[in-house]
Image (cartoon, rainbow, N blue to C red; front, side, top):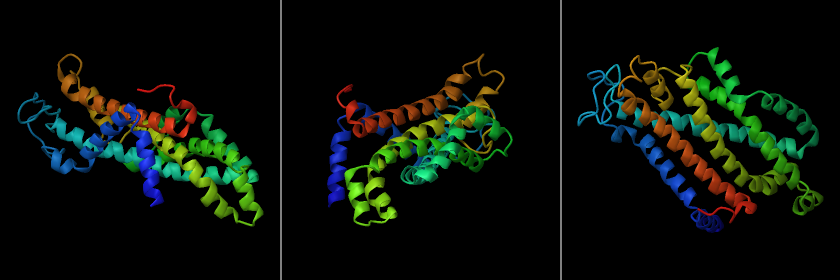
Length: 287
């Protein structure tokens, strides 16, 4: 009952942000496309028709250079792009939160772990991802592995900073004085207080992963068999006459718009959630 009241309170606060509602609506649209892709897509994305057919009643966005329906590719591409984004953000969030809790609560462990985190954060993330991906076999799971390895340090540092503040609070000190074990304090008193911060971090990480995956696929370092939006852009870009004809309007532009609107929706949601987490932002900009 308490959880239901908390959710109602959260939703009432969240829906005050128009940007948050717009972002949520856009994201739900793409999630619906991804979940119900087999029922929404007019064709199988691997099915071949007449190559380079212009948009018409049979193919609303035309076909690509090997005759695959572009609209079906876009719909199935939502599955790949969103799966990578949310899977990576959740897994790296879990790892980063676990390390952040432990490093913030146990000072000696945190000192050594932060040196590792500093080493990761000292190197620009996207160039490092490109270098690593260039030497690995192109596949979705290899990309996921790279994103997770390079994604958890940022979450660890953010969560640790919050834990350092929480561990000195009166209720934590009181629980420690009555003999509560460290695991109980971490799970009962500290984790619930860092969870809102973690949710914001997951949204931000998901948008970063979508950009990174699209960039790698555009450069030809993604999985060539995956129907992701970035890979659609890659195949369109390498087509010889893409920029001296009208092909870009119905081959490149839709995939680019899908990536743009997805990132925009995550940005709006992240802004609305951060406004709820950080009281200092409330009322500063109400859209």
